[in-house]
Amino acid sequence: MTAVTSALSPSRSAQLIKAAVFGGLTGGLLDIVFAITLWTVRGATAERVLQSIASGLMGKAAFQGGWPVAALGLFLHFFISVAAASVYVAASRRLPDLARRPLLWGPLFGAAMFLAMTFIVLPLSQVGPPHFRWSTTPLDIGSHVLLFGPAIALWTRRLAPARDQRAGEMPISA
Image 1 (tube, rainbow, N blue to C red):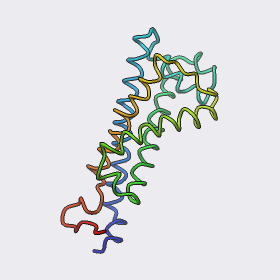
Image 2: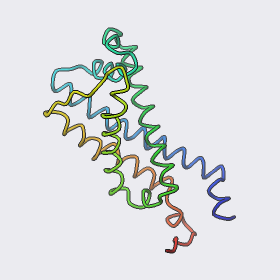
Image 3: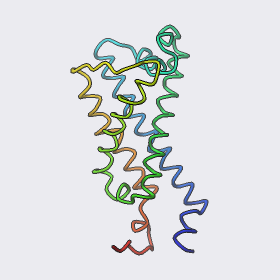
Image 4: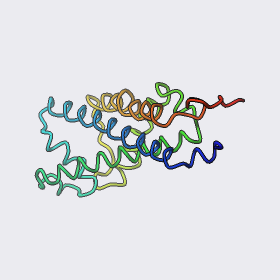
């Protein structure tokens, strides 16, 4: 079987999907647990944190919706996390170093996701421009750099390794 055929095989596609789903769910779980912990220590509730995510879609009305809107926020959070992981996994097919060096590229991806969410997604949403809080913004960046990005990169390495990392294949030569 050639490398092209192998890359397109159903089992290979399933591995790529699993890497994106597991990476997105793991990174999303670590990120949301961190966010809920951070904000409950500061006096918010988990419901409010999740409603704030839904407010990107619903605006201020999200804060009047109770737990059903909080559940929507949780769904949106994981949807975005899996979508981000899908981008990373897909990029690792063209840039194999993303799978080879997860502890380098994962944190950089986490930082890039923080910047994209802060300066592109949020301003285009119902939330509007970001409101920086010097007491929490560095922690939020840190959670993306230390938790979110590396989780996605490590699942990519495990389930969707670069061609030269898979058993029985020759390393890619320069």
